[in-house]
Each structure stands twice: as structure tokens, then as C-alpha cells.
Image (tube, helix red, strand yellow):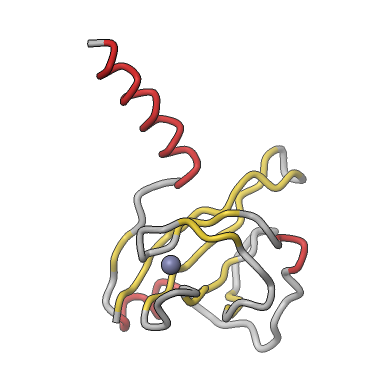
Amino acid sequence: MSENLSIFRYNLIKNYILGNIMKILNMESFILEAGVQLPTTRDMSAYNGKAFKCVCGDIHNFESNMDFRNFMTNSINAKMIITCPNYPNMATIVKTKYKFLFFFDKFESLAGTKQ
Ligand SMILES: [Zn+2]
């Protein structure tokens, strides 16, 4: 009983860090989901060290020297495709999430592809 409760608590915390359940898509749907790619790469070094959930099942810390591309959003949020640092055939669409409009809260993983 108490063990179940601690597992429940553990999952609550884990789900918050990991964010929502990401969609696993084939490459075509994945590219559609990402939307319009920005012609220039934004400087994302402000996000260095922030954790994101990768489609490989692991959590990685974002580094601006990783392989990533920026995509258009209709808000201040940044959206990007990040290639998994361990498996170059896997990629995740990650979006920044803010609290009270100004404070970075976390990365939210929207979708992933394993090609
Ligand atoms: Zn990964």
C-alpha cells in the first residue's frame, strides 16, 4: 500500500520533469509536426544545461552545440528539432515552456521519430 503510494508520487514527479507523453511519428508526420523551419539558427545557449526528454527514452541536457534546428512558433516559445546525441537516427521536437510569460519553466517534448 505505502509502496504503491511512493510509486504514485515518483511517477507524478517523473511526469512533471518528463512533460507530457510525446507522440512517436514517422519521418513525414514528424516534419509536418515541426512546421516551418526558420532560415537562421537562433542562439539557444541560454538554455544550456536544461534537461529535455528524448525519444530514445533518456533525458539529455541541452547544449547549444548539439545538432538542432529552429522552427516557427506563434509565441515567445522556441521550438526546435534536436537530434539525439546518442542515436543520430532519432530526433525530438522540443518546445520551451514559460511560467508567468518570463520565466523559463521546462522543455516540453511534443513528438519524436526513430528512423
Ligand atoms: Zn536521446
